[in-house]
Image 1 (cartoon, rainbow, N blue to C red):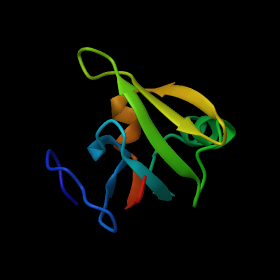
Image 2: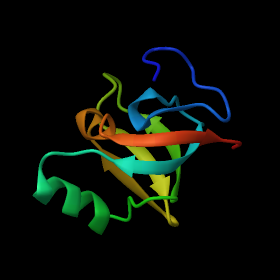
Image 3: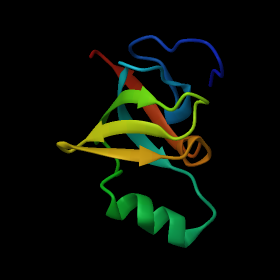
Image 4: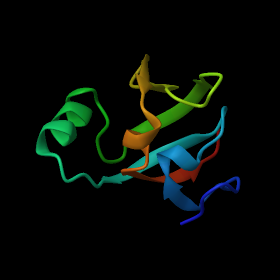
Amino acid sequence: MKNKCTLQVGEQGHLSDLHVGQKARVLALHNDSKSLRRHLLDMGITKDVEILVKKKAPLGDPVDIELRGYELCIRLSDMKNIDIEVIPS
């Protein structure tokens, strides 16, 4: 897993590793909090869903993502618990 480097198509990492304009497929959710995991699932963040990073707040948190035809703002700390694989935009 990489941190501050740009992930290329086919590479795996965390949702928080992506930059604006990159698209990824969710591989798994890793979270100790059952309520937060349920909340993410309820918002549509499930395995194999495609996510596009739309924009980031000026200080980098929260991040606006697009999935399943709608936009969602999510905290950077929550994004670190979502494993992804980068796909072509």
